[in-house]
Length: 262
Image (tube, rainbow, N blue to C red; front, top):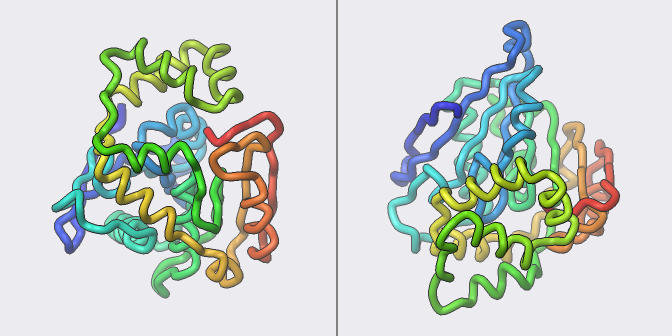
């Protein structure tokens, strides 16, 4: 388990992050990669992906404000994509990086677009990766129904109950993969069961997602951009990445057959 560090934003929010050093000391010279998680998610959700990536470069993971180990002054204060992008830039500056690469998954992809389209002059974004995201407001019925609940849903009593809930409610492609890889399923369920994901912060994130229309920002992105999207994604249709590919000039689009949002 990587050590967690913190830095404080001007509004009093504390951002939690971890630094994963590359296995080969020579790779410390490579441009670091920062990973941005999605809605109602914590930095640990990258699981084995971060372990693969850190084999040949420094990787930074962090919790968006109010989620996981990060905190906010009030869970009722508005949260926007731009504000979370400012947190990302503040993290880059806090770590003293001048150049960095960025990978954003789902909501994290939207945040990454805000970062990439408005890079401070003293920083250089070398490469951008957008996974399972959308440049337009989301219409996910799952998150909308969750948002409209009168009170937070009762949490599962134990990990097995959580796994049963995942099997009932998550995308078939994801459930099939987890059933076929029980060790990964155990690890994922433990992260979900033990993570701090406040309901009010989820609601602020979802409000931000419903306002997130970033198509107009895409043409100003000039860095090499890799787009990855599962063909069976039920949260953000793969057509959303087709919009990214059409609007970002220097982009490569890789659809993943039989893969969903997760």
